[in-house]
Image (tube, rainbow, N blue to C red; front, side, top):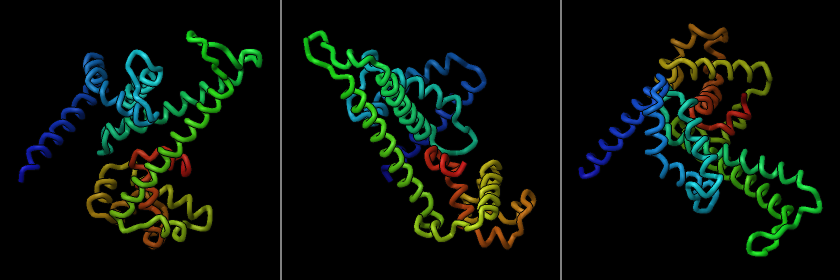
Length: 247
C-alpha cells in the first residue's frame, strides 16, 4: 500500500502540467516561461540521452535546440489525446536534434577544400571532413534509436489489443483501395474523442457509433478490424516516424 501516495503525487503532477499547458494555449506567456524554466533539467536530460553525452546549458548548442523543441512541443501537443506530454516533448527534442546534426553536416559540405583542416586554440588539428562524417553518423544513430524506441512502444500498444507485428504483415489489405478505406476509418476514429475513448477502454472498435461516419460496410470493417486498430494506434500516439510511413 506504500506506493499509493507516490502514485497520487504523479497523478497530481500530470494534472498540474495539463492545467499549465491549457493556460499557455490561452496565451499566458508568464506560465510558459515558468514551465520552460521548471523543465530545464528534463530538457537537458533528454538532450543528453539523445546525444550520448552530457549537455550543458549555456555551453552546448544542443541545449538551445532542445529548449526550442520543448517550446515547440508545448504549442503542438494535443491536449485532448490523453497521452503523455513529456513523452511527446522527448520525441520532438530528438527529432530536432537529428535535424540540427543534419543541418550542420550540410553546412560543413560547403567548407572550401583548403579549409578542411584548421588548428584550434590549443594547436590541435581539426579535420572538417571527419567532423562532417561524425555528425552524419550521429544523426543516423539518433534516428535509428528513435525508430527502435517507437517500434518497441508500438509493439506494447498492439499487445494490449492482442495484435502482433507479424500479424499486420498478413492482415494488411492487398488492394490499394481497401487499404485507403481502412486508413480513412482509422483517421475518423483518431479524430473523434468518443470513438478513441471507446477503442482504448473496450479494446475493440466502436462499430455501432462508427457506422454514422463511414461509407464502408460493417462487414468490411469487421474483416479489417485489427488493421484499422493498428493504424489508429499509430495516429493517436507520439509515433512520428511510423506516422510518416502511412500519412
